Image (cartoon, chains in turn yellow, purple):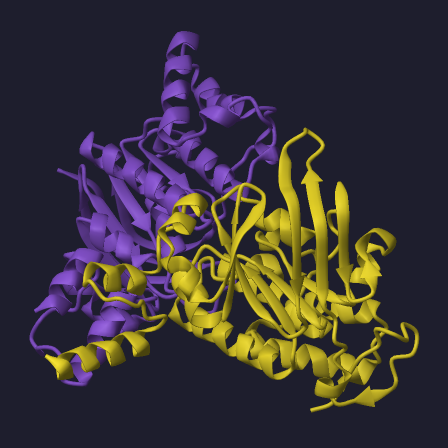
Length: 294
Length: 278
């Protein structure tokens, strides 16, 4: 498959190249980031972190911990009260939301904040059209997004004639079609059934193959530990822990973040196991081992 | 006595090519928590609309069969009267907020004002709603200044305050963190214990197994199973439901011959602990 990137030549989208090689290595750098809403509510408090290009990170924590506020800084929707956010070599203070949209695709928590076209196809085509993607390439991108998001059968439907879970897929497809090197998903698992979660897992795999950086805010810790090698735990406007699923073995982190451990971690604890399995396969492997040694 | 009785309910939306619901028959006893589960597109939200009278009074289409709310036929009863009997929390809480009110308290008061409830009683009921749904701290903020989770609790409080005997809740915790989910589920349990009848659409099967009296399974618009949670959820994977990790681990362990074949798959932490300890 051929992909086109035009981040560095905004008005010349003719050069075709292989996605893998052309995907620019854009690290994210947040330095001493503070953010206060106009009413004075301080939502982020001295957050500094680096996210390497190609990472797959889940941002977890309670409602009000600052997760959505944090990720809204990545596409310039919010600008820091203090500190800086760098997307590659771009400081978000110095670039418009329209410019940043070339680098960061953003799927909102509420699909209805995002949808405004009269058909699914037009909705998905809107972003790439603004990037002045050539017509043939545009159709290829839309077709690919429809397929990856399971929307082929509703391509001509009005988004508001779809159900909420389908509208969520339309917003995800719009971001897929932008082919940005960085993707932010705010609560992508909400309202998804088993098929939807599997489709989401497949899409994460696809993005991984393309070295796309994926940052997802989620409350679904079971999904987070299975699908994301790295977790970023937030509480009271700060990042309080970062690492793989083992950070959730720390009772004090869970308590500060107001989180319950994932189901399998809770079960392993209840059974008195020393280490906590991250997925069902690991759990059963551990079980088989303990049966053998009995 | 049954709070809700559904007989041979079918529905086809205008311009839809096929039925959203077909031949649905069940009854919901008073003071119970009935969970509705099913894959996306199975007809759960459509059934909620029909239980609350939004079908046929708001959404147009071809409705067959009958829904009776405390004995009243939903087709024959005006929506204004039905809403005093059954409250519906929409799947998307952002759609529930009126946009006409400046503060959370006023938003909760909105429905009561329309019913002409006396001021003193209104204040008591609003205070109770704020407390039950953990909104005291934001009572004087704009509904639009709230987080997604707080807006969802506001939507629930706005329905609760109307005191309908039946509450239909379409994914009431979709925007909530684990603690918020726990609080709302505890509120739901309290309401059922006080005699309210709850119909709950929910993807989080662990909670259904903990709370629900009965589970109804919708599959392609039809009611394919109903009964006690643990028994019914044995086949959760076949209906496209997001199974608990407990059940998934137990199934895999069973396939590998690590556990007995004839024990029901666990759906809660307690059941799983007993299941794997043996």
